[in-house]
Length: 316
Image 1 (cartoon, one colour):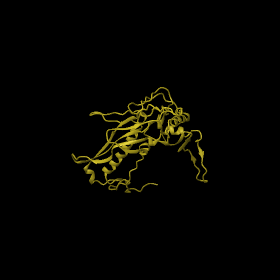
Image 2 (cartoon, helix red, strand yellow; image 1 turned 90 degrees about the vertical axis):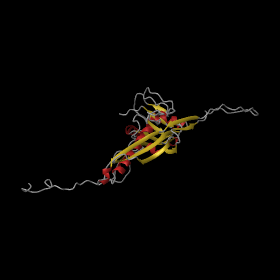
Image 3 (cartoon, one colour; image 1 turned 135 degrees about the vertical axis):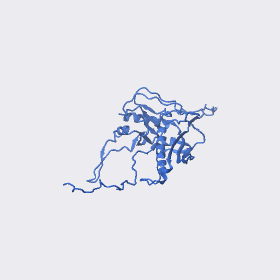
Image 4 (cartoon, helix red, strand yellow; image 1 turned 90 degrees about the horizontal axis):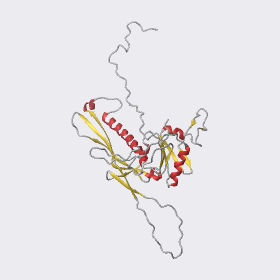
């Protein structure tokens, strides 16, 4: 079949209105499981401090009748601190935009502000997981918070060789070693160490690659579920892992280093917030409108012995 001669079709026409859906599709990940799980406390200085303590080791404790009582030597609490970090993003939109008819959003400024707020949460999540030492900052250097790896020393399982643990007070980062494959034995070893130190871990944060290895842990291999015919499916899940040392929930994450597996007691971590997230209009200096989204906070490690890591895991 062929089109009749001189047929006027839509390819010849002018004035056809565009067909643009009134929605914007965005599948970029925005989950922040660690940051979202942490309780928020009030910080009142750029150096947010807290104290930690521990009991002495158990000892034989028996005395004769009438014996003179002598006081034991005691140790002071340990004072810890972390610097608040300023997370700031801004957007400028020309005022001409207010007169335009747009698809998918009524206001370009409102849409952009919401978008940068979500991006800022991802930046915070990344900083909390970062193997980064705290930085005091000055007039030319930004303050930086010490991320979780720079606090943990008591329960580290190193899968490879080399590397060095940090001091454990946020002043230095851990040194990476040679990477080797993540195993169930490595994970169980870290869990046992945490238990021996008094911790009660409840959450595990790990990359998709390490999660796939965890899915193969003994007792959690693929199982075919019992379902109705026509709705058959294969279940491959490791939501909860039960060990003699505690029960933990596995959560795949995108913002932590893929080489490290974090085993955390979440209530032993929190965020000290100096300035909560705020959306502020900036001074108008021309034919445009400016807004910024700002958060200032730090990571609080209440006691690092309650958590642990499996480090230097291969990522491919």
